[in-house]
Length: 195
Image (cartoon, rainbow, N blue to C red; front, side):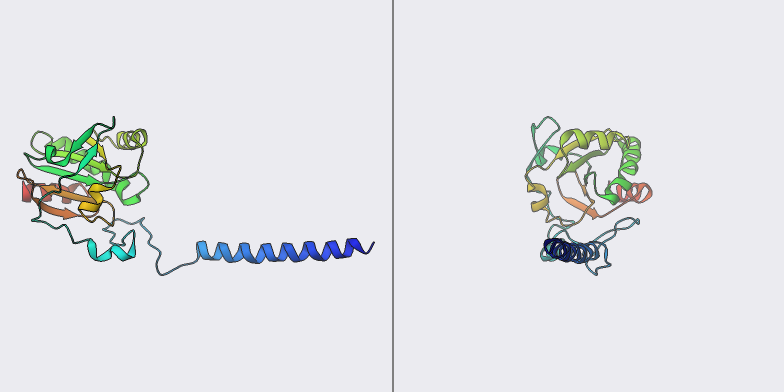
């Protein structure tokens, strides 16, 4: 009989401890922290993926040459970025779990359909597997070329720390504009201004 009250006390103590630790963990996950970023509203998000890299965001700016790195297509065939130049080029860096990326992707598809005869569009995805990338883009009517940055060489070369990111590159390979989230009308204006 003496064992049951002791077992009851120990069980209650363990349950209390689990409750306290669980409550603390839930608070940490759901509390309004000052370092949290909510990306469910349109606009450009500048919160870097790594706060220590914040100063690098402007490292590759308009006027710089498009870095020469090797991306891969959906079949893992190598595609050097140098092979993308030679005409007006729009490079959009995105991935499927990025809310602002998802918002703008259909706009890119719309504008691409309008200017495909004179401006090349390329989507660069650093995180998704090929199947997911293609499926996600197709759901938004994207028909332009999709490439992957599987080793992060493009992200590193342009010092990319926030998504989405779009680069307009002229025929000689010079970056003429760089923007965050952009929608159809603004993308049209950028294309008309630079190409």
